[in-house]
Length: 319
Image (tube, rainbow, N blue to C red):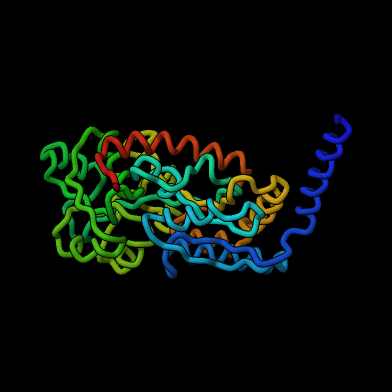
């Protein structure tokens, strides 16, 4: 009996090694849980292309938008754990949605295997170019003087941008009136028209208007200044210790062999060091990270707890 069990374990281990050596034997699908053409899609396609070029693999993008990214992540979580289906997950669908959605169809900690953290990007606080609010201090002072009178636009309830604004309210003990819009571009006309006071949004969604001189940035929410807007201070320069970013990384279905996860991690980390990849993500206001699967897993666990508090404080929910 003992010999039989030992033999079975040996064969299982040998099969895992063989899987890693032979992998990949067919195309790898990278699910992007958002529509084509957006920042996540563009960045995913770049990483997929570089991974294909470097290793002579065939990595294909599969866009599965909807439900705040839940549809695409759920599709990946329910795929065979063989290394041939991956997903580009983010703060929203991995750390925020477990609290925001009443019935999430997957458990980020149980149903997915972290592979590698790709990068992160800050939220930008934008105002009209001729706004009397010149600095973040101006914004906070006005909000303290007139609680609830300052209006904050966001791309939608429960988005990273919205909840970053909630974190600012908590940290600075102020109150903004939140005005949610349906998507990143929808708020721009009202901001330009003076119908809202400021907009909390991703850097790429306001970058063009800032460069054109129609919008101005008060601050960004990262730990350090944005490489494309080095003269714009961080929120942390006004509120010490403040940070709220959106991060993104690649995951596989739970149960994917560790040897395959390790191979993917090593090869994607190499791709992330390429100048073109770093420059491309940098142009979007982001920063390349990389690291081990264990580091990514720890981040997800910590972020679920951190964002749960903010979601509950905001009152946002999706049934």
